[in-house]
Amino acid sequence: MKHFDCVVVGGGMVGAASALTMAQLGLRVALVEQFEPEPYSPEQDLDLRVSAISLASQHLLEQVGAWSQVIQWRACPYKRLGVWEQAYAYTEFNADDIEQKQLGHIVENRLLQLALWQEIKTQTNIDLFCPHNLINLSQEESQVSLTLKNITSLSQTNITAKLVIAADGANSHVRKMVDIGITSWDYQQSAMLINVKTEKPQQDITWQKFFSTGPVAFLPLTRAPLAEVGLSEENNAEQGGYASLVWYHQRDEIKRLSALSNQQLQQEVMTAFPKRLGQIEVIAKGSFPLTRRHANSYQSKRVLLLGDAAHTINPMAGQGVNLGFKDVKALQTVIASAIGNGECWHDINVLGRYESMRRKDNLLMMSTMDALYHSFSHPSSIVKTLRNVSLLAISKVPFINTAVKNKALAYACGI
Ligand SMILES: Cc1cc2nc3c(=O)[nH]c(=O)nc-3n(C[C@H](O)[C@H](O)[C@H](O)COP(=O)(O)OP(=O)(O)OC[C@H]3O[C@@H](n4cnc5c(N)ncnc54)[C@H](O)[C@@H]3O)c2cc1C
Image (cartoon, rainbow, N blue to C red; front, side, top):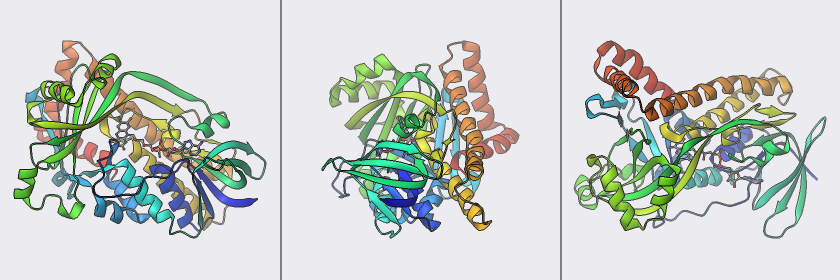
């Protein structure tokens, strides 16, 4: 039987990043994942799942050596972020306001995961168990025992760990196995993700317009490596750009939209989205119900929860994976300082520090998203006027502008 310091269950973006940060501390790590990400080729379709990667997340990805690969494949920087409900209260945030080159990058989830995996495969202190499924876990006094099943050969492997990191997503199997409950509710909405080709050239803005039925959002995408984005404007103007559109609406309406052909959906998008979108061609679509979940505890006897296994939030502000990466960084910081101080790094008190660092911050972001969701879906005309006046104040009143806008922007960028 193989013994590891740390076993990470789930090799998505958060789990893969966590395996690398634990390996950086000199620990012996195992990563368990069911499905290997598909290799990259430039002709591949753009992934439907994309994330707005904040500056803080970019720093983590640089630290683990994955970012340079991501930008050699494709990543779309955005410099501006526009939000509005009524045109008069349009508010724009700009990277210049916080002295940065951009606010973040839109990156395809699959490419991000693949770049992390590429780095994992070069590490001598990480063992990759893939395609493996975790089928049993037992928490003992001095270790955790795990049984893995190879999905192809059906053979079983037993391993042990001093610490198990559960990064196995929103419906975390590990969380259920160790009996950690969650507080959750369904937003009455689903989100439809639509990849489109745009008639307009590649853009440097991401925008969101609020309706009482839910927001619609535009995230710029590219098929070019970062170095080529924004170059060759003439060519760009001729070829147009790409984008990921997100359409939030009541579940029945998203169900209806999902059943349409690409051409019919294109007509619906052109009618419902703001005119600034211009002409588009739908190339792919999919939808997800929106659910908020928060684990009642982030740890139970040598098992820790990270990323979506610990929390899922309304994706309205694109913060989901960024919170997961903050979890990853916090855990590495806590364990590094315990090792530095000569403490037992997997002691319950050390692991408790990770939870106290992250719980409040995750809760703050979740509550902010809930407040936005409830405020913008409130039908009252008084509430509607109030929210537009607030946006107007943020946009136009100089004192509020610098005090609130830049602070909010820096927080959203994770700096
Ligand atoms: C509509 C929508 C839009 C979003 N947009 C954004 C955005 O713009 N920005 C952003 O930051 N976030 C966004 N998010 C959230 C983001 O996608 C998630 O927070 C992120 O994918 C979570 O990553 P994760 O690694 O924690 O979990 P996952 O990506 O779910 O990875 C979990 C992994 O665990 C593996 N696994 C599960 N069970 C087992 C098992 N028993 N054994 C082995 N392996 C297992 C799975 O195969 C998977 O690879 C969005 C979410 C939605 C729904």
